[in-house]
Length: 231
Ligand SMILES: C[S@@+](CC[C@H](N)C(=O)[O-])C[C@H]1O[C@@H](n2cnc3c(N)ncnc32)[C@H](O)[C@@H]1O
Image 1 (tube, protein in one colour):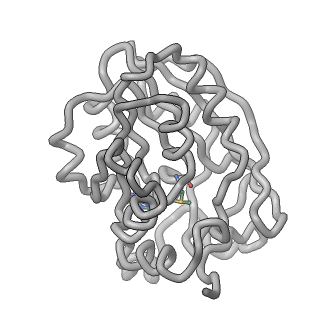
Image 2 (cartoon, protein in one colour):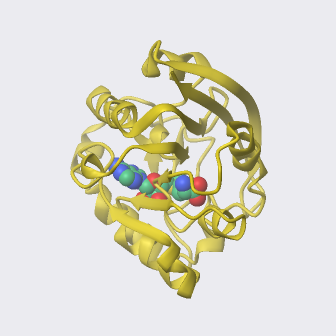
C-alpha cells in the first residue's frame, strides 16, 4: 500500500498557526480516516519505535497499574501495546478517526478487550464528556493541530474536566523550533510556558524536556514533552 498524505513539512512556511479558508473546508474526520486508510502504521510520519519519552514521564507519576489512562488522539499508536505489556489494565484509546482505532484494535487482537475505544472529536466532544475521570491524560502530537482558539478552549476545558484531582497530563507537541505542518495540516507550536498558561494555576509543571523525534524516512521533528499534575 502506498503511504501518502502523512508527511510533516518543516520547510513549508506558507501555512502557519492561523486558520486559512482552505482549512475551514477540511472535514477532519475524513482527512484522518483517509490518512490511516492509505498508509500502514509503521510508515506514518509520527510512527514511534522508541516510546521512552512518554514512558519516562509516565514513570514519574508513580501511578499504579490499575490507573485509568486516557490516550487522546491515540490513532494506531504502539503506545497502547506497550501499556498493556507493562501491565496497565485500565486503558482508553480515543481518536476522531474510527479507521485508526480499527487498525489498533485489529493489531491488538485478543488483547483489544483490555482497551476501551472511543471515537470522538476533542474539539467538539460528546462521548468523552460522559467518561469517568482519569488518572492520566496522554497526548502526543494531537493538540498542536488545533489552530483556532475555540478548538483549543474546547480541548483544555475537556482536559480539565476529565483529569481527577491529583491526576496527570502528558502533553507532547511540536515545540517552537518544530515544523509548521504535519499530515498536510498547519500546526500551532508550543512552549512549556504556553501550555502552562492554557492549563492555568490548577496544574503544576512536574517535568519537561525537548526531544527530537526522527521520522520513519529520517527527517527530524523537535517536540516539547511536558508532565503536569492537577492539584
Ligand atoms: C500525528 S497523529 C498522532 C497519533 C498518536 N498520538 C501517536 O503519537 O502516534 C494525530 C492524531 O490525532 C488525531 N486527531 C486529530 N484531530 C483530532 C480531533 N479533533 N479529535 C481527536 N483526535 C484527533 C488523528 O486522527 C491522529 O490519530
